Length: 106
Image (cartoon, rainbow, N blue to C red):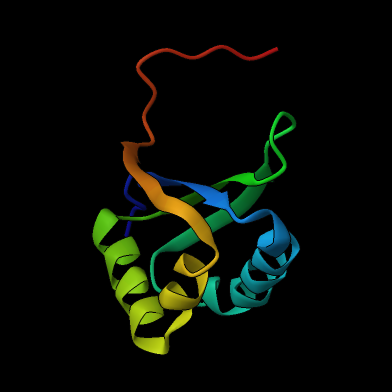
């Protein structure tokens, strides 16, 4: 069985300054369960060098449906509500095909 090309999910978060460290620790605590979900490939959390309250979550999944199933799981556990309570504004999500239209490497 061949692996699909997959999708990248990006979620940009603007977090309340007093909750930024809590946000990071919350996601770190979720990652061990995330990696067990069907279709999961990898996940990374990045923090802006310009604004320490801006974060980018980058996930790769075999299919968009795998991510949607995972997102529903997080809604059901209450994790999504807990994360949203830490935000300044709603997170911005994107779904991207993994096959690049253009690319370069060093």
